Image 1: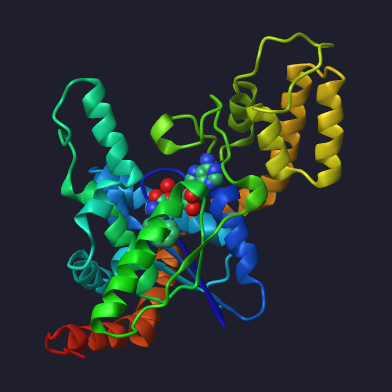
Image 2 (image 1 turned 90 degrees about the vertical axis):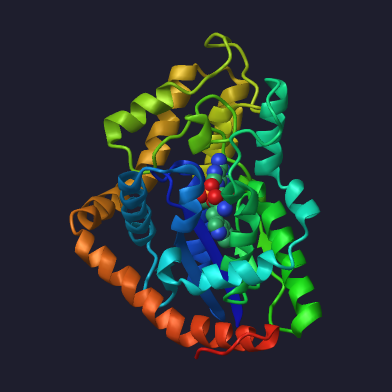
Length: 334
Ligand code: TYM
């Protein structure tokens, strides 16, 4: 069977971009035949950005409840918290020792930090932690530890998957065929969801719409999406319109075609926003109710996560690390 794996960093409240880019396609894929799915909460990754323990814990709970509310069945898929599988850390070290430093220098997140420093005349690495620099190696360990074939992610993550292939290949070359080389699986029509300001929806840009915002807040946020200054009656451009792209991500082809025509016919922005709100609210409402019920019972979520990780460690992680320790010349502890 094909192994599908993906994670979400526990650094904030899940937003529509996470839902459209990762959660919705992942839950749909997990219902298919012949797939073994691995979905996890990337809390080791969260520490790179968030040094507030309460926020990491809160986000972990919110993201776990989100997966479950969106229809993930923990009896059918592997659902776990990254830090509950500490073998990931040991594998990170093995991969660190084969990862090319030059390749890590080219990682987007690191390069962006260097570019920002250069713009303001700081040293290249000012304020950059080794954790940020090592981000792709930790992510490669997440993927390789369960020999994932496919990794459904947004476009921003493709480079990381390519690095995971690179590190896995080098390890295999040195120590024997231990790892499957993973491939990114990108949803073509919803590659990158824009946020309120038209840039990629992202926690870092503070332009997100929380997936389970209460209805009145959802409406308010949707009405704050930036549009151009064209008046009702004037034709609107769909290209480059955040509002249109958001609508498309939640609507059927027929509804999208109707909206395209409404744009050409000069629909007013207020009317278009109302339609977008209604479309998103209709999809989200049943899940929002499930989410609120789950958030009221954190002990149940905690038990689900622990159970997933315990079974996963016994089935895959510990035996694999035993083989890897042996392969690299360390004592097999298993
Ligand atoms: P993270 O937490 O930034 O985002 C989680 C997932 O949501 C997708 N995404 C989006 N998709 C479409 N439009 C957007 N505006 C948008 N914003 C976010 C991301 O592409 C991602 O799929 N490094 C990862 C977490 C991770 C991981 C892994 C993923 C850690 N280990 C192993 C896959 C495999 C991250 O920070 O995603």
